[in-house]
Image (tube, rainbow, N blue to C red; front, side, top):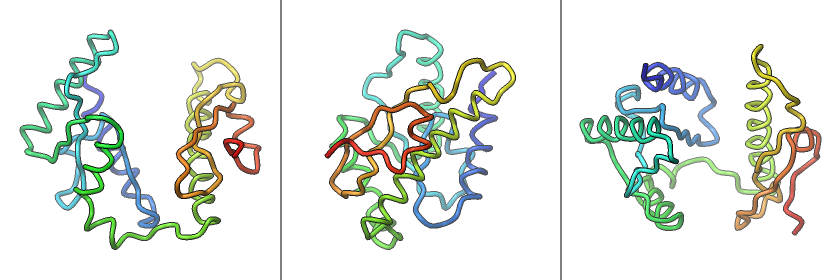
Length: 174
């Protein structure tokens, strides 16, 4: 069974229920062109050479999604390094980004970064909230974004879910 056909529309529905501001970026292999509204701003990032991570299922899923994207004539960017990919995405969405609301102050940026990190905490807690999941979610380590708020900062912070949730802010020590 191909779960992305079932989960994709659910993800799109969840994203549509979020506030219009700040802008939302949703990523994931479960979202395909067929589950998006006609006016959606979307692009699919495809690898030059599909990465199967040693698991044939991943390679098959990547091939299926790429085929769906190609049949739909959806916008595609071939991934060719982080900076090149970011520049291509910014160019594709330049008109949308110009008029979009954005965090302009240090406090606004910090609040958005904190919100992103707490969303990751909730994802881990949601997983461990399932009856079959075992372990202590507070002890799970994850990579979070630095919450310093500096617009140029791209640092990550490695922390446990428990520490990330209770910290006033996660910073990379700079």
